[in-house]
Length: 182
View 1 (spheres, helix red, strand yellow):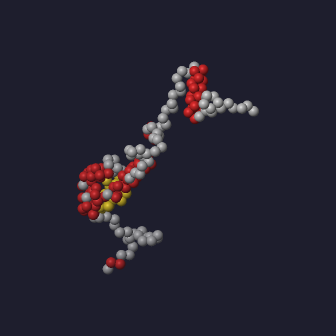
View 2 (cartoon, one colour):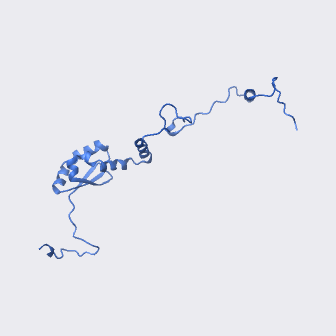
View 3 (cartoon, rainbow, N blue to C red):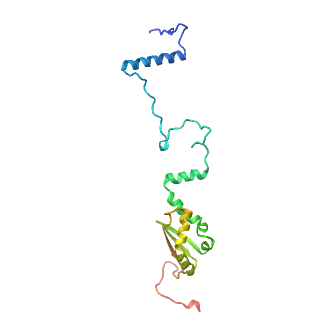
């Protein structure tokens, strides 16, 4: 086996800084031999989410994505990332109904369903159903102001639900005996 000569420098074996210096000089010499006069440029910084430069591995004195976040901010980011914006806005119509339309209207009308921009509302009486049909434009404006435009585009008002005389799985059509009232 060949013996390795560690005494390149006059002071004895090479140390860390001397090794680095000799490696740099040999890399420069190799670059000159291949015709490249400038050393290779550094790589472009890695890009993280949304094309922003990737951050270092520690948090600085400024706010960072890895710092503790308020729950509302995380929930809203999750809603946007998953594409649930329409469903959450529809849920706000039901959750904030009394605030959106007012206490007196909310006392006599309840939202039933929201499908494709059409909000179905059931009134407690036929008089309130008529009143809601007359107030339809104002109610749609209030809902758009509170929740956002495009969430509710039409309002369908239903009267009170009449009692059903159909009980059970088997039912005979027609009036049937009505002797239970007298």
